[in-house]
Length: 310
Image (cartoon, rainbow, N blue to C red; front, top):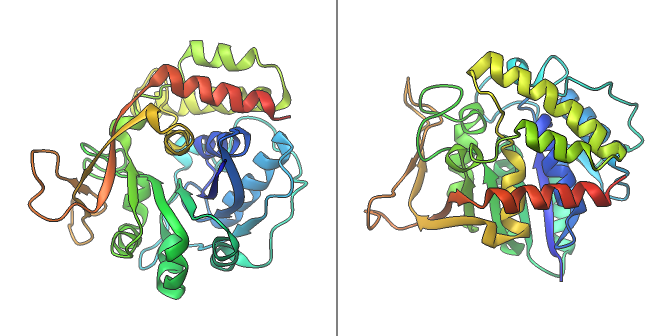
């Protein structure tokens, strides 16, 4: 029976592939999509989510806009990676999917409450919407099986020496969610940097030949150039779909149950995730943390999902 999932995202090139994997994998049932300010402003990420769904022919899955800024900080976006639209590369078609008027927290609350099975939240951007849900409707979290977040790192960061982007944008939200009680899984840079969109991967996806693959390869060509310019990487890491793959095919991602905390006060370390990986945690374990990816199996899942879309 497919696992009911809810995608909270900030598209973003890699979020597009996360959305397609969530919609196209037969082991997942995508209930809804919410957007947050992150890779771009909220107006951009919401528009982009609608575009990504339109390109792939995804209809009947509500999309609602959420928080336009972090809980306490000023929003910083990532045009150096995702371009001025937050989804640069291909021409963006006019979306054929409307914005749900219930808003992110309202949609999350209604759909999670209505689900007969506990829902897994897939979060691929800053955790602001999920933190607001935990604060305003904590009773809903009783029907959440897991919050699987692409963010953080067990090592170095990608926006500061210590912090990964999603964590750095809103570390207070990470802290709220960690304190909110549902199971929590972190899929950080240490694993997502194993999912490199190499030239061979682009050629493989191009061979699919449908509208989704054509659009996706154009996204990846821009994304590749951005990573080469900004970080000197020959092939970009496709971060966000790794979190989706963990839920669709848990055997693809090895995890450890350990202690996870986030730094919210440090001048140089705000957004850094502290993960105990040396023996027994000195404090109670509170999260699963991803440590290894089956790279070949991951790309098999991404390709298979794109094949069943438009």
